Image (cartoon, rainbow, N blue to C red):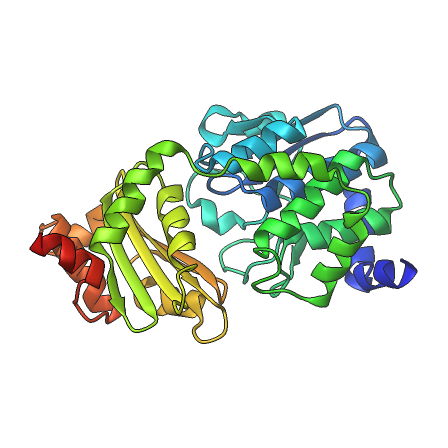
Length: 353
């Protein structure tokens, strides 16, 4: 166990924990920001930061804030199981909190949503984006989960880690690495090993049991009938969907098909075109493909085996000469992704019938 702890308590971690402790004041207040709909890695990292600050300074007030509500039922169940309440950014007055932290994202992700608020603490494991500065910056590209880094923070600070936090950290690592199928470092394995024996596995199993709402079945049926398959790749445009989670769930499901190693599923959510990439992380780099293909039109990027692009429909309206029909958007995606326009056998059989 000592060898595992030494793996996680790096010089960088110790330096940042000391810096964080110096930033805290007695009876302090803290707002922890998460971009988009909160996922388990962001939530568990926020919990770890709150616990560290509470034991070091005795927080009087702490709030967790996200820019979007939950879209994945499983993530909502996780937050409920952890006893976490998350407020929306547009309903939160950040000026009431002395310290502002951003976890699992970066200030530039928020665009103009933060106004004149400049976070003092930024903790993330994604590639650094320009346009911001913080008093405490810890950006470690390549880590499978921020929860791994935060486990090191807690160990370096020598604070007591409650069982519920061990459970959260383990689940954060487990979910963000997709059970160690993508972007994993030795530190991620070490943090998982350390939290494994101390976590509440009954609680984790309960969270993982309920994943897909029944109303999503119509999207799976649509994908089955309208997907484009070319060799070991599948593409499907779902049209208008209720949230981004629909695209994620369908993409994850299609990747489980035998001899499929690369999947792209897209859908329109309100005023945005969402494009979800999934792969085996070996043959193709999803993050690089997403960034290269759609980065010029919107936000795009991610990891080798999982990535996402988001494009405002207003931007596409100019590109497509005002035509935002299903056929026009599908053709746009097919051309940019260089997918051969041929229906899968299942879809063709249906159309003949």
